Length: 498
Image (cartoon, rainbow, N blue to C red):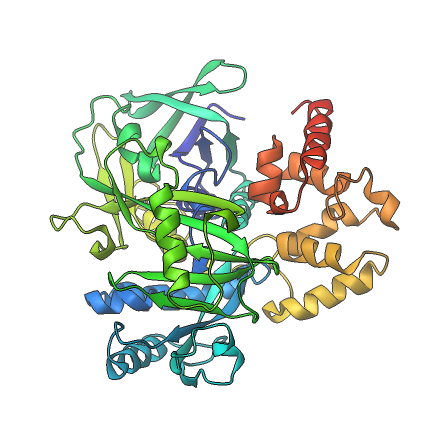
């Protein structure tokens, strides 16, 4: 790695990696640092949806919704292995909005942006249909619309791979200690979190994409006049055994006017979320609380025939959103749009990113990098809207056809493993399958699905170091692993020097 770059990015979440990919693809030299693993914060702890934000129409956020709907189509083309259409069912109850208002909102949702891949909304009869089979019998009608499900952490990895393929340096487990302007460049002090070695890097521009840690990072930047306020909002989720049949999700409105999603997850589970809790403390300390678990279970039990409780929870996680500050104090009404702030001082500019939502990460990155044009006049133009992310480069973005091709190319692969490879890696799976001719060629087995070839690929190409990296971010196989299997993987990683 060179010790100087055009831009230096702090933060390895979806926005940081997307900015790195966009900038590197425009010809800039890029270095990104992340104190932990990629996507180890908010970007692996969201509701895992690419959506326009139907409820934001209620707050007249038409521009944000239009932009998100456009991005939904673009992202479906860019990463069709990681993003898939998902139908949402909205049961109508007495405490929800009037039916005419919901239909009006869905009309806008259908028409604010052009669509190619997703059907339009419709009214549903829940009686004697699969849509209503698991719901309380008094729920007779509802509405249906489409958004998308995404493997959030893997989308971050795909952006990091894109950045790396365009020449960016990705420094995981590297803590940002400080930065100061020195002779029209940034002198950046870093620490390797494993070896504890301190070293320096130099860059013409510094970009703070710390998400909920943006203020802590700002406090480590010396002699900056930039000031801003943010709100921190915790969203918690639970995963329980599947509570209904069907490959559609539910969007359920509570009496407090918040919505909770029930989403089919990994075929055997239901993902439920999210809460909306204002935080004032350090985001490092946020975890789901018993009160939040009760809230989510109660939300489900108000709609479904089958009741759930805390003992049904298999996995839970909490993510902290960074929002623009608002005087209102109600985080659920604060805009999810983003703000880009540039401080141009001593010919060493600082760009700070505040807010944003997962769906609009590509446009955020594109606009952020476009703001750098005055400082890098030879920089190439925007490019990401028409180019697939690594793994998504298969014809017509048709995942079904790609999966079939993968199974034909490797007929000896069990169907569940082939599907796992296709969904997680897309065409990147060929990197570790190319030399394999049978199951034994995949090496040591850690479970029915995870083999040595995949683990080595994750170490060599995707910055994985620990069992948590592999089981909970690169894959979600942690939901299926026994303690013995996890220990076997840990021992193997130790042998690999991780």
